[in-house]
Every structure is written in C-alpha cells, then in structure tokens.
Length: 133
Image (cartoon, rainbow, N blue to C red; front, side, top):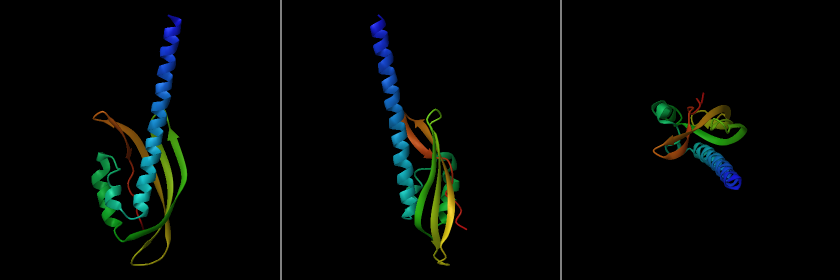
C-alpha cells in the first residue's frame, strides 16, 4: 500500500513539474514572439496577445504608433512568478518617428498572466503598448 501511495505521489509531482515547465516555456515563446512582432512593426499581429479586457485601448495605442519605426529592443529584466503564473518583463525599445528621424528609447514594462479559457491555457499581455513620445 505504501509503495502504491509513494508511486502515485511521485507521479503527481512529476506531472506538476512538467506542467510548470510547459507553462513557463509557453510564456517564453509568447513574450519573444510578441516583441519580435513589435520590433518588425507587425502591430496588427501583435494585437492578438493582449487580454480581452484591454484590447480596445491597446488598438488605440496601435493607431498612435503607426508612424513609429522600431530599430531595436532589449529585454532588460524578467520576473517570473511560478506560483501565480504571472511575469513582468522590462524591455527597452529604440525607435524613431518617421517625421523626425531622431532616435529615442522608451521602456516597455510588460505584465503577462497565464489564463485558462475554454480548456486551454494562454499567456496574455495585461499591459498596453508604450507611448512613443
């Protein structure tokens, strides 16, 4: 009986660890894909990542960024909370506006959360595209 209990407990722990690794791997993939889309000014595709609750406001930010050309981005810091399935990412974005051609840098403090919807787990962006002054 003890052997059966121990093997079931071990299986549960291993499944839990694999699930957490899978969730974290999904985050890493999503946040890198999102930032690549922003980098290459594929903002319509990037608009698929924000949560539904901020989708309308995010689209307004997209309109404001239509004359922005991103030159580069750097991931400065990642804080991943495995217990809450949340992450904060600090990204520096180098850009210029087509009207000024002056290189500027903006900090994008991204907040991500893992949400289960209709039986699927998805990482959703909970913060807006930064203002590009």
